[in-house]
Image (tube, rainbow, N blue to C red; front, side):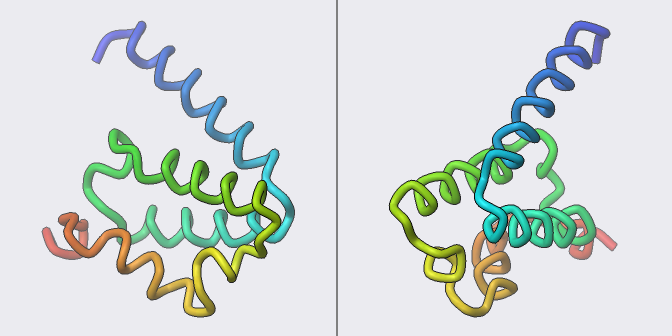
Length: 95
């Protein structure tokens, strides 16, 4: 990975963080908890994949439609996340 790749990755991450900060507070709280969980046990390709940006897009659509975050994820957020990563190898699988 060259310096240009690192710079581009940092720009993309900052854009991602800006999108998260623009979410309504309830969505932001749930997103932060999901991200924390995924960073602990999540997919091996989490950083390079499109899971987190896709999740933000999903949350943006739900917020734009006027739906509450638990209407979008369901009451069991952990089950929602586990369903998202069910077919992805995780660090827990490797260990």
